[in-house]
Length: 401
Image (cartoon, rainbow, N blue to C red; front, side, top):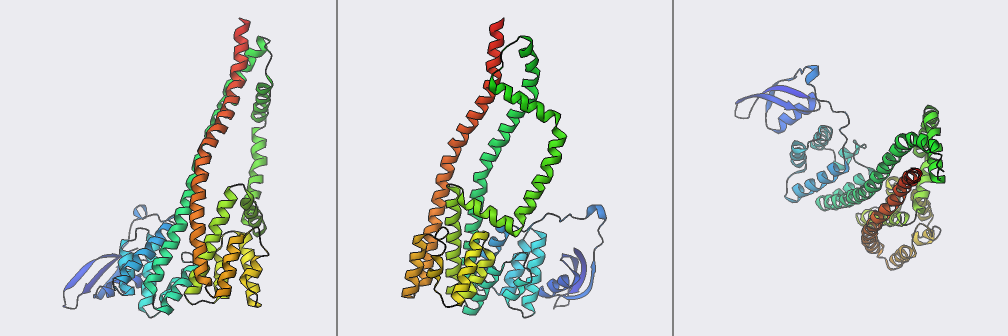
């Protein structure tokens, strides 16, 4: 929203112009921070056709970790919190995120702790973010905490980016194969079939199968769509449910090679989060509660919940970890056990996190190296089979001339 304002400076100089803000109150607050005494403030009336559409302007993970990194940089330079927030809001491009940061600055300026102001925007800042900032406020090391948080989120962002990038190539190959198969099965082979029948050429089994399939799909296309649409809708709804997500998460963990990468990534995140939270002053139980909320995989979430309950009863973490040998590796269990016995659990968890982070990156690189030639071979076999279904009967037709 844009507001037309008139104001005077401390020296009495008249100022006027337009300011952007999420509400009239926020606009007034911004002008006050500039040292202006506001005498007039009204919303600018913009024609409907000229209004900016803000739908789908999602706040991305990159927006969040860049915010934390730049925030830490300003605090390290001894810039006050409110002034840092206002500086960051001025350069944020996403209007939704800009409004949130301005609102946080307003809350902090009114006397609220930063963690409390951020917690009012739970759709952007997670309980993990809030807990880390609380520990930074309590220890007086807010800038260091924000730097760690930015590093943590950036690693997650980069890993997810690599994972999505790894999926783009096979997806494009699969789409290409479907396009080639569709052209052959629904355009070339059906028109070619009449020639084969007319010449009384023996049709190979592969060609027969493709012809039968293409005929079936062409005749029952609408029925197939009407059947598949609700099936996919049901699967999607089931995946979004608690039972469905748990089932699919368990399946993902058992996929060869990919499941191993996923386990290493989750173990790295759990150990790093637990180490960071406990080093910031939180109890192990409170740290596990936050980790339980932030772990994406339902199978691991259930395991963390069981560990938390065990710790509340006085059990050690390592004793509960032994109940989940398929989720927590012997190395992970051994390092946690050593940390508990020697009183160096936090250091051991950081070592585990660094180890699995390195292993995850190495495994992902190996996965991508193997995936590309494997996809090429599979595509070659499939496309070769389709081409053979056309070329073999064509060769037989030519022999009849």
